[in-house]
Length: 324
Image (tube, rainbow, N blue to C red; front, side):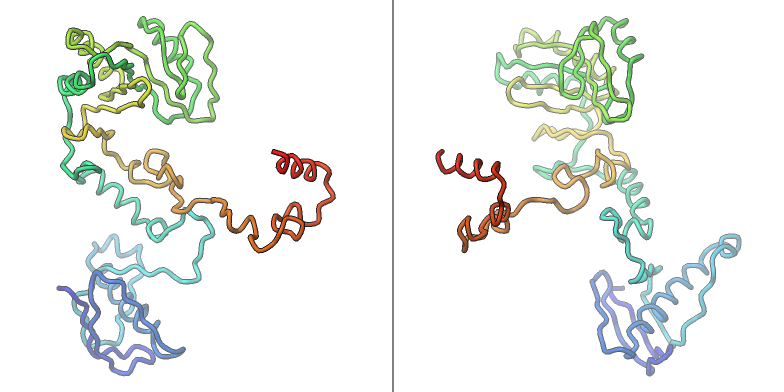
């Protein structure tokens, strides 16, 4: 059914009205004060949707939920379980959304993680798991002579000092690690802030791509998959790095994704938040047009700090800019 049908609504000041509301659309109910907007939206539609939902639960569950009274209406068809958010229940937290207030966000994250099918963001093809052989083939597809560094991510965005991890890696015969983007040796003292998130990768091999080195590259990739729990980071020197995964990867574009899990769909997690806005949906930027008033000179207050300033430092700074 593509619409909600209401017949004979008489709740409060509603005068036996009939209407049809399209489903899956943003519908706004407007009118003057006392015209029955809240009576229709909250006391009729929401009340009946909530009442039907509660009645569908078990007797044990219903005892913890208040059953709403049936509204004064002849017929309502096509109504789904309803959610009501009071307009006065405002939150000044920028991370508070309709999804978090209603707690639907948590369930949606689980649905996406458990039954979602990942697709390549570039070509739209379904993303599938890669084998070690496919990862090696993609590395060998780079121009011959390209310098690459093969690494295994062992810590990704977690807090801690990881002193024991460094000791264990040293005992296993590893020499170098990359900590928060900086190459370090395991023979030096590595101190980390336990209250900050860190990324740690084992540097397994640094090699120039060549068909004759397939065996060596394959060994390094297999070792990286073992220590990185199915993930391999290949840094192409001077060009950036690629993430390869035994879990999900596009065979055409080479785009790899980590294991699909609920935190990837959370804007409160560093793994799921947009890198541009950190999950807030907005960015604080400086608008040059608001900083400088093009209609005024500097002496007239075109740039506020110099408007009526007697600061010698600001005067010297302005003089230096003029001379330059």
